Amino acid sequence: MGAGHFMRCLALAQAWVDNGGEAAFLTSSKQESLLERVRGNGVGVRRLEAAQGDEQDLALTLDLLEEAAAVGDRPALCLDGYDFTSDYHREVREAGYRLLVIDDHAHLDRYIADLLLNQNPDAGLLQYDSPRQTEFLFGPRYALLRREFRDARIRRRTRPEEARRLLVTLGAGDPANVTGRVVQELSVDCSQRMECVVVAGPANPHLEALRGAVSEADRKGGASFRLVVDAREMPDLMGWADLAVSAAGSTCWELCFMGVPSILLIAARNQEGIAKGLHSRGAAVSLGWHDEVPSGGVARAVAELASARELRSSLAGEARRLVDGRGGERVVRALQRQLRSSQGGTW
Image (tube, rainbow, N blue to C red; front, side, top):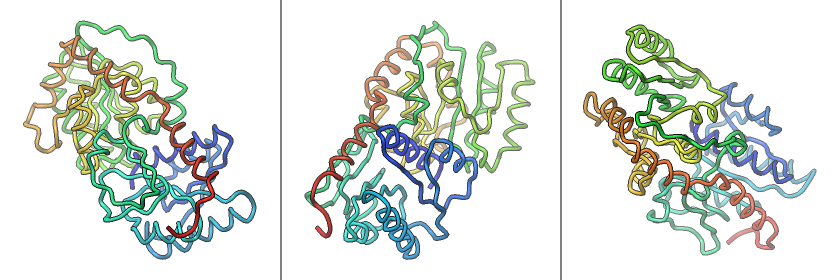
């Protein structure tokens, strides 16, 4: 579905392996940079030549589950994607496999799963129709963080009167080029003392234009700008930053855990609940949908937050209280309980 979905599944796989299990990705992704990360974490990759959620996908997935069951313990399946239907869920369960479904906005009429995970703040407000046996894992206490964040040394931050180090991270793909717009705004209105690190994914379709925009912004002689593509050191970058401008996706949980006060922009429907939830809890500042923010609005928000030391401290503190880094452990324990129980087959 996208890098955020991919990375949270990697975080779950890492947590499963860290607890002594074996994990594999079943995916149709062709993004080698993402697949390399999976393989580099001791997790297998099986490529599915099928569209997500269709009949061929289901048949191949059930074959691979049966193949795994023939050589070891009966496996469980985790599904993360918006094309997996209620019928797909039912077929997996009727084949006798435990099922964990990761969801964001209750888009299906019915979820037929042993475990339903929605790590967003508004999860409890959504209307989910599920069998009575389904166990709900709701809210940021189940936020899935990759191992590099869980192992990061979180330094005791000093909050300067004026923040000078800004991290801009608006999604690995960013098809609307929100990053380019933000860079342009900051290059005009940002304080001369600000250092800006802009992060982009290798699949960003505007990468070359973005390189030019960042280079031009840096040459203007105001704030300094640097572009990082396919960042592998995100914990270090977040540890460095005094504040961030971020898309309201999975990166939010990493920023929360690292205690980075953040300004959020909504770039996709599944980010609405995250942005609104974090804003209402005082854990981030949401500006709403990226294309509804007035011209210059992002730069003004950065300037205001950069000079508001107490607000930055309050945002960071509340964010850290929401995400403690143990979400993966909690999900793994819940799935292990399901695997130990005797219930199986059709509900």
